[in-house]
Image 1: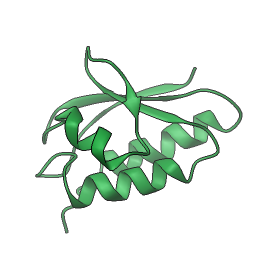
Image 2 (image 1 turned 60 degrees about the vertical axis):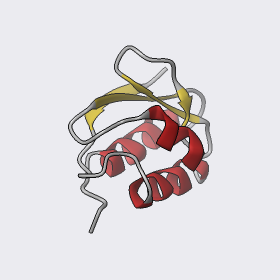
Image 3 (image 1 turned 30 degrees about the vertical axis):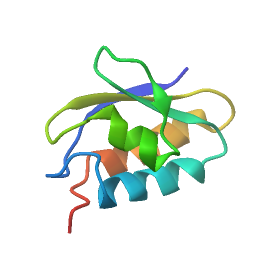
Length: 88
């Protein structure tokens, strides 16, 4: 199962606008993408509510994972979004 650790770059963390952008991108992937705070339980990344309740703040490390055909590309795409400041 491909996975990638990434640091949340948005100043508000995965909340509001950044969460909506990440959820939309995750839902568009051909596989289910999950995200977890370091040491926490993974949640589906395609849900804004899941991302907001994750409590991932600026500078927190999260683990993004997926399984199946296209999983590596999906993980990379979502990891790049999380590692970008989406507040602007």
